[in-house]
Length: 293
Ligand SMILES: [Zn+2]
Image 1 (cartoon, helix red, strand yellow):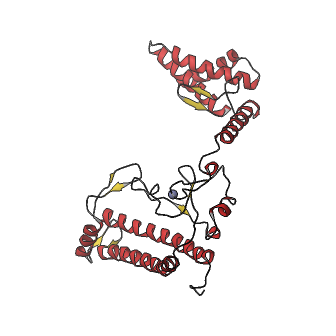
Image 2 (cartoon, rainbow, N blue to C red):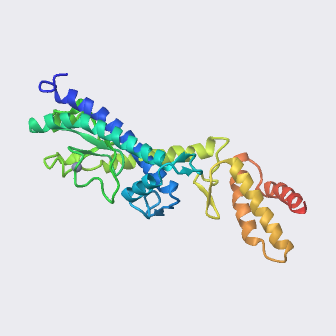
């Protein structure tokens, strides 16, 4: 490819692939960093559920591993020098991939740039004109961008016809001149879709022999649990009866548990065309046997 005559689509198709590989290479660096810290016996502090911080910086951990050199790390089955080497290899590989991007990014800048349409899956599915949009990469989390290189160089008007407006809307920071219907979610259409989905789920609970709902087809929630299948309901009913009997045997009230069991029995009765009392009586026999053991 002659870079000076390549089209935006051609250049961005290559860049999209380079960024995909760079992401993978970055993950390898992260894995190597985790290896350094764990190898040194550090334990992370979780800042959020997924984000962790280490007692030492990467540079400190790397220096510590280099210092211990050929000392064998029994836990990891390799030397500290090997752990440092794994990190070095990952960093070198990432740098090589980033260098591939440099020349293409330079050509983009030389031409004064061209239009791009990055999509983001989370956070409402916005379309951005660049990966450095101020609305992205927030709270220390990196946004995961889709490149859509086949749209590079198109006008906004040309590009938006290629998107499904229910899945994507334009970012108003990136596209200040965007038509208003392309910057807001079609709430009426979204509500219709949601209502249709809820109706289909309700119908399934009433007609699918494996699924269960309340007698009117609503979601069956008992004692804080959502019971989705007939089998799950039968198990939950048995469990409530078991604990009711257990409480009663100890001289306590099992009424709460019995009430939950009855709610489930009524749902099962509606589903199976049986009587709730019969279902409860049969389940109680089983629960008594279980308790007797
Ligand atoms: Zn944006």
